[in-house]
Structure formats: structure tokens, C-alpha cells
Amino acid sequence: MKRTLPYSGCLFMFLSVFFLSQYFTPDYSMDKLYKIVPPEKKEHKEPENTVKVKVTSVAWPEKPEKQPSPPTKAGKKVKEKVFKGSVQIVGKFACDVKFYTSQMQKKGAKLVVYERGKGNLYGISDQDELTKIDRIDKTYSQTSRRITDDYPDAVKIINSAEKIYGPGRYEIILLIPAVLEKELKQHLVQIATQKSKVKTDQISTFFVSYRKQNSQLAIELQKVLVGEHKFDIGQTFIF
Image (tube, rainbow, N blue to C red; front, side, top):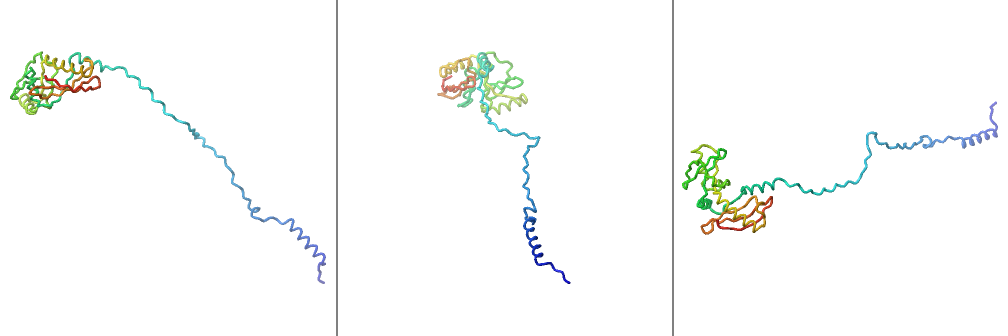
């Protein structure tokens, strides 16, 4: 005999299962199955061996005021040079050098070859012949004029000196009588002080130009050097 559940019993079981499934069905959504965990915020830490940089305003220090430099010995040397009569005369030629030397020789100057290092002197004749000078008169100034670069026959004369007296360092110079040197400097000082109002003992160098004027030797005082400054003069006189 086949056993079957009563109709009412089957209906009861069906309803029971239905109601239970509504309240106890597990949640299978993705959010529930896979819980998304936000990334953990990590606090930024400086490495232990670094130092935080501080930005500050930077200003260059003000330049210190220029202090006046103490006086040097240069000024004293200039005065001593002038006092001792060793003030320099730097000249350039606006005329034939032989004209200049001939005019100066008429006033007692002597054209010679000087052997540097040994101190030997050799007189130069009108024909450019050389003769050894054993002694120079003390009446000549210790200041001489070196004209090696300007004298037209300098190479010929120096070659002649080397052939006769042997190799050496030869220069052509003009020896000036001390009286003539003093007279020239007096002219230059007088003009310089009148034109520039400088003091005589402050002048260390005269810059002059030699020229021919009506068959006479004219000297133009162009500038004077006082300390480190040059003063323009620009006056000519017949010497």
C-alpha cells in the first residue's frame, strides 16, 4: 500500500521552508564575499640622517668704507731724487738726431759708446771712429742721454766697437756738462711751475720733445710727472 503525506502536511512544510529562506538566506554579494580594505595611511617620516631645510633671507654685507692708505715711501723717494738732482728727462725726437747731438756738442756735450757691465767709454768722432776714453771729466753730469735706438748710425758704430774691443753690451749715449744740465732743468722747472702750479720738489720726470726751429734747437716741455699724475704743459723754448 503506497504511503503518501496528507495534502495539508505538504502545504505546511512548503510554507515553513519558504519563510525560513526569507529570513536566513546568506548574503552572497561581492562586497560581502570580498571585503575591500582601504590602504592604510602611512605617516611620512624623515630619514634619521637628514636635516630639514630652513629658507632664510640672505643679504650681502655692505662694502666696508675704503680706508685711506698710509703714505708710502714713494713720495719720499721722489723728493730725494729731485733733491739729489736725479730728476729724469724723457725726450723724443721731432728732428734729425744728428742735428740734436751736433747742437748739444756745440754746448760741450760728448757723444760716446758705453759698454754696459764693464763701464768702458769710447769717444765717437765726426767720422764715427772710436777712441777709448780713460777718464771722464767730473764736470759732466751723472745723467746721460741714451740714444741707441734713435741714432741713425748706431748699428754701424756698435758693430765697429765689437770688432775692435770684442763682444759686449754697447750703448750710444750723450754726456751732458753738469752746468748745461742744470741750465736745462732750470728752464723746465720754471715753465712747469708757471703752467701747472706744481711744486719743484714734487716733479719726478719731465717729458720733452726736441725739434729744429730756424736752425736752432727747440725744446717743448710737454708734460711733467708728479707722483702718479701727469700734467700737460705744452710750451716750447729755444735752448
